[in-house]
Length: 294
Ligand code: KIV
Figure 1 (cartoon, rainbow, N blue to C red):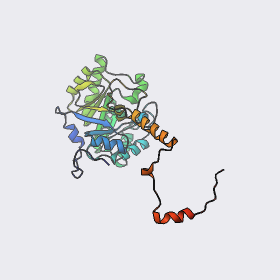
Figure 2: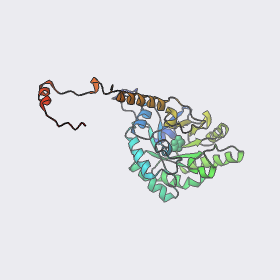
Figure 3: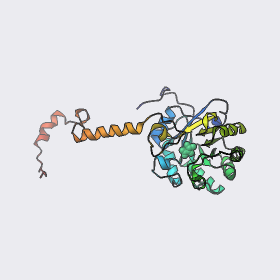
Figure 4: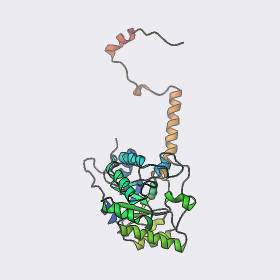
């Protein structure tokens, strides 16, 4: 198994929510989603500061058409798997649609993502309306990453996956949202699919780091979805994605080669085959079997 660029014996110091909170200092925060053990391990080894088990896994891993139907149980299951792959990055779990509709629900479900899922923080979508949930979670000892702008759990209200914050009024609302979650105790806030000018204003108006996805290069950090970056999800690609590899195509090609080898009987080869020890071979040859071949 490959190891990361650090020596295998030197265990990296885990990044905490306060560490991320303190990174509003010009140093860019590198974030990525991770949905299971291998993606978390690869993201951690690549040097991510924060790994998010995003509810986008509903689409990228479970094949749903949006993020609305993933359950808390499913998020716990994926988060727990991802937690086994992480040594250094801060592992954050997304709270699914309606799982934080009230303060009580937020505490119960947020608590499960931490105690059963082994996340170190949770993320939830929304601004002013969810400030009480952010406050309650933070006071209960659960660090919260907030998320404003295009919040995919609100696509019915937005009329689809549409960029937000395109008017002066909308920008004022976004600033109020970001300030409300900061005030409530969030340690950072995701800004999704908003104009760069709006992102710049919001970033200036809060003391917590902003993590952009489709918000230009003015935010304190960036996050993208693993499957988009690596070319594993091609149902649609948002404008804000940069694809760094086409592993979907590479995987398909490799599997086609395997199929072709099986069909022309060049796999398995000698190197993939176990053979009887010489001292047993003569005995084995004497075993009589009744052929069932027609
Ligand atoms: O679910 C998700 O992937 C997100 C993004 C911020 C990356 O919420």
